[in-house]
Image (tube, rainbow, N blue to C red):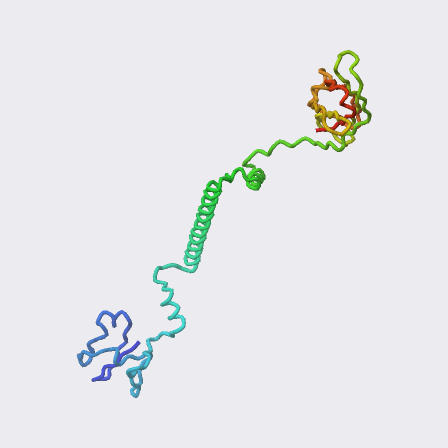
Length: 254
């Protein structure tokens, strides 16, 4: 950059440091006059006819100014000494912090919702952990042991092959029911309870008696083993004789 003395028209080379040190003023080395360098500032060596910039003109400082870039620099000043890689790292760090904050907020909202749901369920008298849906979800997540599998049981597949009711051969005032049952299912199932009902001529119940598997199985057998498929099981049941009123009977599996 150059400035020209307004009195003797001597041209002096200047730079930003010199201008800053004298607040833009200088003393001419030829005529010794103090003047403002900014009033006669030129980018190139001025010709005799060259005129300094007028008020309102954009001064030429020997630099090619990009106004759009200058506006962006004002919005995102680069005076912190960071390069492109540092800026990218800072942006990534800021993005990570925002993601952590958002995740923490969402987790907190879910926790508050869970606590509110728990308290509402307790208030309604329906404990949340006793809900079938919650129990299934906890089991799938491995937080609760799955319930033991229920044994297969289908009473419709237990068939009565034959039955006979006679007076007891040894005990007076007793009856003996002989029958044979079979499990027609393709797999083992538990032994059923057997309910015997004695009826009168009008079909009214005279006597009803229920027998557990221990009442008709051999003591040496294992009731827990269950009925093997297609295996016939003969059984004998003793009942109290209600007298001549009993004219019929029914046998059901329970």
